[in-house]
Image: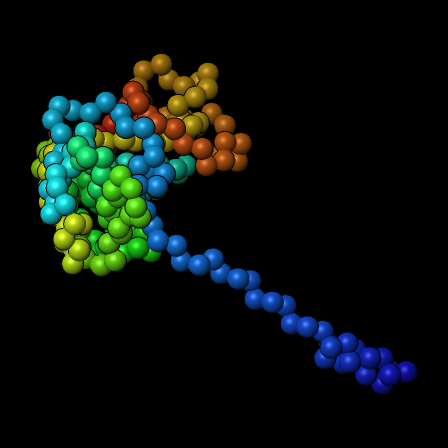
Length: 225
C-alpha cells in the first residue's frame, strides 16, 4: 500500500505545472513634468525668477524647489530638487533630481541623466512643446550648487534643446507626518512635534508644514539663508 501511495504522489508531482513567474512591470520613462513633485502647487516665492537658457529658447520659473519629506522616526528626510520653467510660446523645460540628505550642508550635487526610475545620483530632464511628444534626456549630466538662496545649475547632454544653464532663487518646502501638526495636544508655540496617533492610524500621510512649526523643518530652512 505504501508503494502505491508513493507512486501516486510522484505521478501528481510530475503532472503539476510549475507556477508562472510573476511578470515584472516594464521600465517606463520618467517624466519630470508628470511627477507628483511638480504637480504639487507651488508656494509664494521670493522676489525674482529662475531663468533657463537653452538653444531652444529662454524659459522662466518662480523658483527652483527643494522639497523635503520627513517620515516617522529620527531618520533624515528624502530630498528632491525640481524645476519646471515655461517659455513665452508655451513650451516647458523641466528637471527633477533626488539629492543626498547632506545636500543642505554641501549645497552641491551632481547626477547622471536617465529616462529610468530615479534615485540619488540620477536625474531626468524634459522639454515639452505646446504640441507633439516630449523630449527626454537619455544621457548627460546635471550639476547644482547653492549660494545663500541662489541656485546655479547646468544640464549637459547631446541634445542641444535640452542642454541648459539656469540661475535663480531657491524655495524650500517641508512635508511632515500629519500627526506632527494635528491633535489637541499639539503645542501652541513652535517646538518639537509630538505625534498624537499611532503611525498605523495615519499611514504614510504627510502634509506641508506651511508655518514652519516643526523643529525639523525650521532646522532645514536655516540651512538656506
